[in-house]
Amino acid sequence: MFMKFPRLLLSLSAAVALAFGQAAPPAKPPAAPPAASPKAAASKPETAAASADPVVLTIGVEKITKTQFEAILAQVVSQMPPERRAAADSPDAKRQLAEQLAELKALAQEARREKLDQTPDAKVQLAMRADQLVAGMLYQQISKAAKPTPADLKAYYDEHKAEWESVTARHILIRFTGSAVPVREGQKDLSDAEALAKAQDIRAKIVAGGNFEELAKAESDDTGSGANGGALGDFTRGRMVPQFEEAAFKLPVNEVSEPVKNQFSYHITQVQKHDTKPMEDVTPEITEKIGPEMAQKGVDAIKNKAAITFDQNYFGK
Image (cartoon, rainbow, N blue to C red; front, side):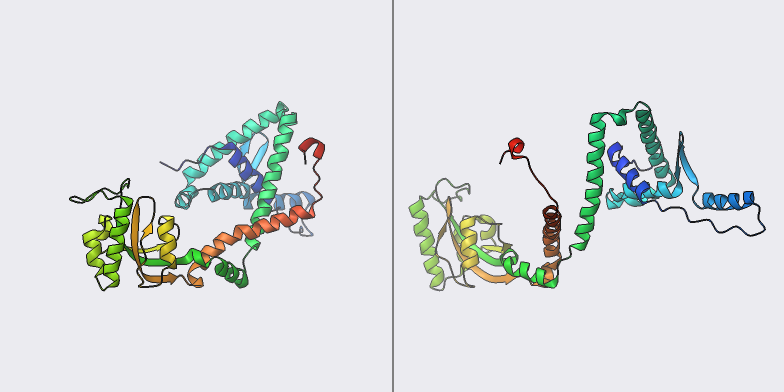
């Protein structure tokens, strides 16, 4: 089975417009030798040009050369997932695209014979599609030129450094009535006050020299982390409940927090490590983030340069 191209006439018509707009003009024929007859001088360059760029598809009176077809193929392939692009170069795939292109062209030719392209609705849509096509090409050009400088990257990194901060921590969770965390077998369903008192007692034991890991295994209602001594591993902002996260990122290394309350539990937390990714590790991520912002500034500059007026009687203020 050869690959199937998506049967999207609009996408294909855009590719056709790009291909025909970008097709290179034929090279000027070489000057005829002095001894050649006018007929020979005219026919030889035409034959050479035709053989260099033969017509590969004819639909009615419309002819598509190899160069034009391959430009259309390149545009269609560029919209495909990378893993499907290699198969698009097979003869079967090219034939399938040619059949779809022939269908598009045949329909378009018939539509023009019926003067559908002259209707008010068609004129509006054609104008909009032409604007979208060239505006999209300009935006791509602006995006490619909008490369952040080292100073831009450094400024963004410094302003958003918190996004690349992480902590390695462990905790002991004490639940109280209403929590989604189930009551451990053989344990009492504690009230809020009872849970707070238990958490304070556990913290006092740790501060007095008690082993955090052993107390987590024995007392934590988060049985998953509790079995590992309360270890949560490392995490970045936005991954934990807000109250716990806020306390963890503020807590100095090795200090044991006071009990931190969220909706149905108390946490005793100990941060083992604070870390921030260096700028060189996140430069690709920053570039991806600020590239569109810089491109938008280019778009805004073009809009500001244009004389744009809105009729306030129609659109309102």
